[in-house]
Image (cartoon, rainbow, N blue to C red; front, side):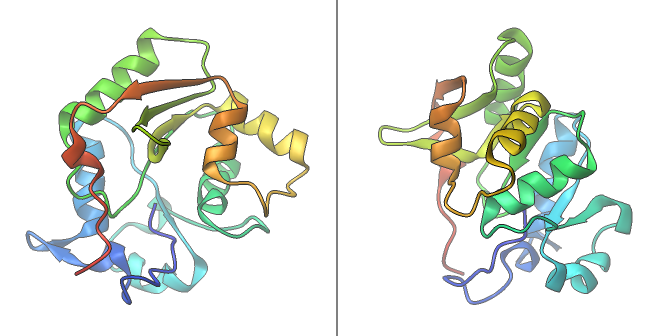
Length: 178
């Protein structure tokens, strides 16, 4: 997920360089390392810049009439309505392979949940989570796409969510300063 406004950073987070590539490509590589296909969620103003980094078919621009990061998730869901989605924010550059592997294993071995996320002491960590197609379809139908006041926390609290304890806190360090 790269489609944010990057107001606190003052620059597009996904394009910040790290190890001779940008954050978005760095995170895409982490997903590829755990054998997951990658799609990059962007807002429409980012299209030209991201086409210089990724194949056009990997990019999904926000298409829902809602504000915030749920737009990105639901836009990707609209393009791939039958697929469960692992959402990973481009600014989680400390994400460890073990954290991703544990999430995928929990999803595979604990069927029946709508969402799979890590939980810290106060709230769920929505930007490294798995969102099932079934739950996203239900969310869209129940809300008739009037989602402007809906947050990830509300979505996770209203669904059947598997919440896992964070064992690698460095995976969830907030990167809001360059």
